Length: 156
Image 1: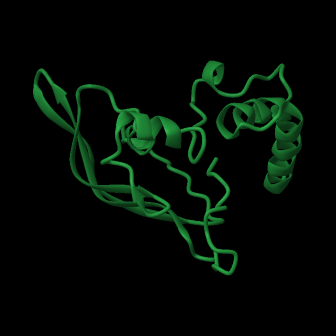
Image 2: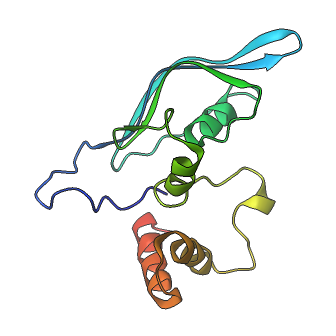
């Protein structure tokens, strides 16, 4: 979920706005056998309104790329080259505190493990509202209204 783009001038055109850009990004994992090349020279761009699906066999780097974007890399990860930019801001140089402020407010991830993603016994609108209360400081009522509006845009 990417934050609303409220910091842009009202007259700015959002068509074609690059939300996420990855340029020449390479990532290794340091192992006892030496470096393991997990990602090599990844380039991609997602513009406003676009959806990207990553498809590949097990071990092809899909999760490593998602972790790199979210800055959830394990201690044995070594970023070799490239940049990962969210709305023009390079995430690679951010401090841990800056990343914590970006996560949940401007970008978030639904993990593959169902126990860490959406809870089937809690209404989806309520789950989204919880995030909005926590990260945007909305009241529960405001967050529920906003969450339902966001859901309506997805067609779910």
